[in-house]
View 1 (cartoon, one colour):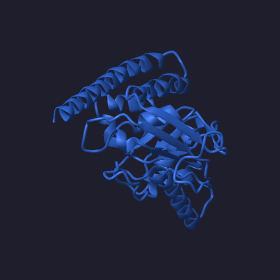
View 2 (cartoon, rainbow, N blue to C red):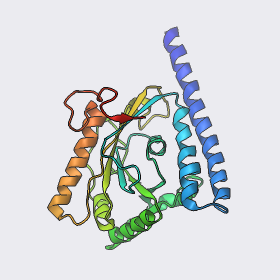
View 3 (cartoon, rainbow, N blue to C red):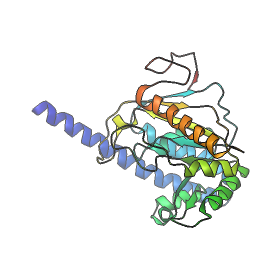
Length: 264
């Protein structure tokens, strides 16, 4: 009993530390970012201050982090990165992983959230309204605008955090947006995030996090049937890695040995 109490106390202290350091750090990054935006190019600020600054929060978890890149992934090409949604640290994982400036796609009301909405505006995030027949075209136009500025798009195709650690059905809307904008899709799969933290609890447990960044998958000019295949393929790639550690083209139930794929 005493051993369990000590373990739980340590976990609570660790979790409080992660949250406290993260919020304090994000506040400092946001202020620095806002001031720098008055003097420096926006995209430069996003990459050097926003992305790199927010990525530091992942270090506060004390987790070992490994990134595995598909050999055909083009780090310079602006794309729509599709990530499985697990916990509130997902965006920090993306900041640690995506090698250039990117913004998020989110509900318009989220921009009204104090502090969080401010950061999303600094990142040039794309708001999605709750209705309207033309909303996909409007969002696609915004995506084209961001790509023209040198900014990629981060999306969570499940549209909600997992409650069981599994990858759930992808919504087609973000893929319609990608096709309309002429952007390729990049599977960004995480493994270990559910063990770190999950929906319904604020407690963290240090673990190893492995991230797989797939090759770009084209969407421009695809028919509806072809786009469905892209959705299914992207979902399968992310599910295979997140749930079983399987990399496309590999049969082992674990990430490939070091040296077979580029990693960092």
